[in-house]
Image (cartoon, rainbow, N blue to C red; front, side):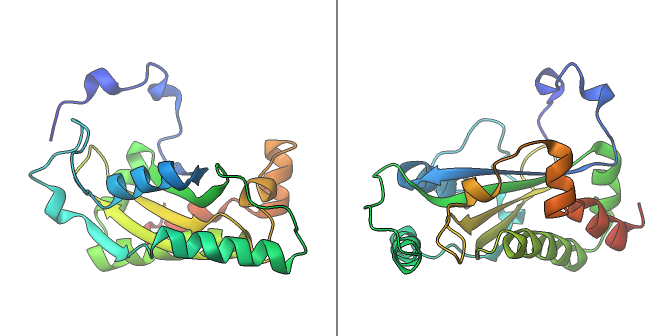
Length: 194
């Protein structure tokens, strides 16, 4: 692996070593295509990717064609009574990443591959279910400094609302209460005992 000391955040020592982090971000078509190329290692990749380890990555769920997802988003909006045409820069997918604090990472890495995959799949599927959308892709990366997974969801929920509206926060605590975002720690505990 590459030496990543120069990439470590100065406040990393203050972070939670047992944490499971899930971050999501809406992606318009152009950015969704770029994200797919990164997630599935299509074409040139950033220098931090260890090309000698890329074959170790695991594709748990392939991404269906982005235009198909975009058409489904449009149909969901129409079914919900939206009459305005979607903006050209509207999100097509919501991209997510699942990462770990260093202690959680060590415990997770000791799990057999099948259990790791099941844990990633369960967490990504539960997030999609809570947001009332569909999981579209899931890939595990082992060619960077730490094991992590990228997942992709449809950008609109089953009610035709953008996922970005469903995740808009009034406060972090309210979101934890309303959405139950303690999924990561509970799944990690179930699989690793942490």
